[in-house]
Image: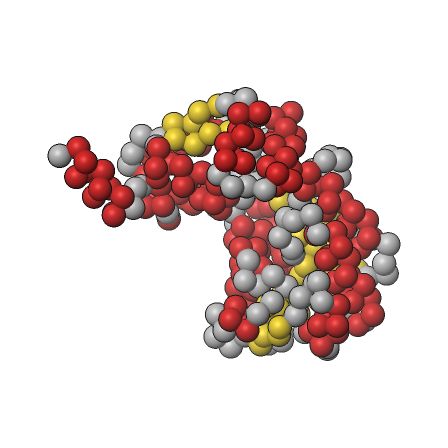
Length: 301
């Protein structure tokens, strides 16, 4: 049986979807792990669910009963190391055969920010006798919606201190395909995959693509890191989170996130989803909401 953790999050939900598709063909049993009954009630039809929490060690053994393969993912929070270590220990005790770990680009070399946390979890996993596959994806297409769409809707612009650095954005749904395949172990056992998208874009080029698909003029505004930090804090972001985000951004500015290779296409058996394809699905996310636009129109009438 396969256990998909973090099933209510972006990656966990995508992996669960892919695991369900594979199970429909193979008959493999799978289970989705949620932290609350409210979230579990939203599971796809036909999914077996369990309520458990990485932070509640006693809840993990029941979730792992009869499980052979586990997909581990956690939100990027300071407690990530402790929480994922808890889950790895529970997997060892439960006799799990294979773990697919959701890590991050830069975990091999970058000693700051989110990648450094993921590296410590990777090292913990490798210290066990459990077979593993580690996935280190580049920045997600979906992050464009999460972090930049709000200011684009309100201002027609998004801000960062990325300069002309290039990023090979990947779609979470493509990474989920890799995860679902890797949960079977086999040829993926013992592998660490650094997963890049099909093209490396500057943020100015990203703005041009958003303009094309949203039908409105969108600008990327490059700002100094200290100005970005203040803006993040003013918007209510916690200090540790702002610092970690800027540290990660500094890694990309050094040119570490612009690699383009054919590995992802090889693993999923088709061309990866491009930024243009992604943006064409969500054009309205970058436009002012109807109510806000109506107020703006009224104010200028």
